[in-house]
Image 1: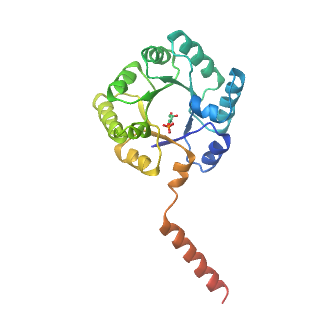
Image 2: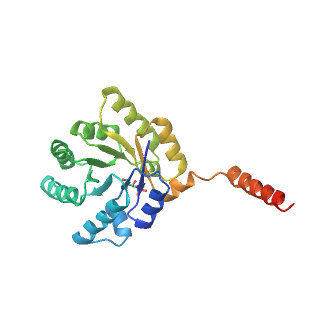
Image 3: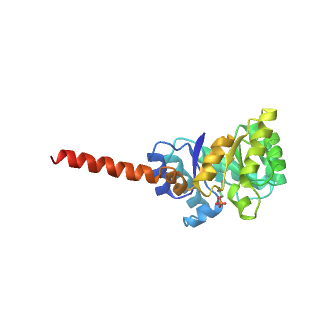
Length: 219
Ligand code: E4P
């Protein structure tokens, strides 16, 4: 299972990378805006800064929603660094753009996926990654994890090569359940990754070990 971090914050990306468990980064226009990044040159420089931190796979999202715009923007983004994966929204021109980039050998991440039907279309077009949003489905009383299971099952039926990149992960149990289901990749905020470290028995056990060691050393 691959771990991506879902942020455009360089300090958070460095922190996750330093743990030695990071396989990539996903961003979106809202995450870039949160870091105060705007304007073509600044956006490109920020993506380059992210690519310089990690070893591989940085999803950079297009803003255009028409085919020609997505192709131009995607090609420009892909030129920033070999690690860039062009993130394309799940719309009709997006599917056409994914098909085009597939034929050009440019990796894509199909984003804003909320149904199994959308997942089938993206795989048929040759998306490298598919991003179904778990948390946003949960928010409207649908079962986000059930969708991940459905897509993993369907892709398995036909041997689709598109990797299921579970997104909009809000807490550690989302991540653990994705691992049980067999999602290829999870992308989540730093607090979910570091949340995996936590267990009260680890904390109390370590405190006891250290106290016992200090007691023995003071004799
Ligand atoms: C994925 O690529 C998205 O950037 C992200 O996971 C969306 O998460 P959110 O629903 O918490 O905004």
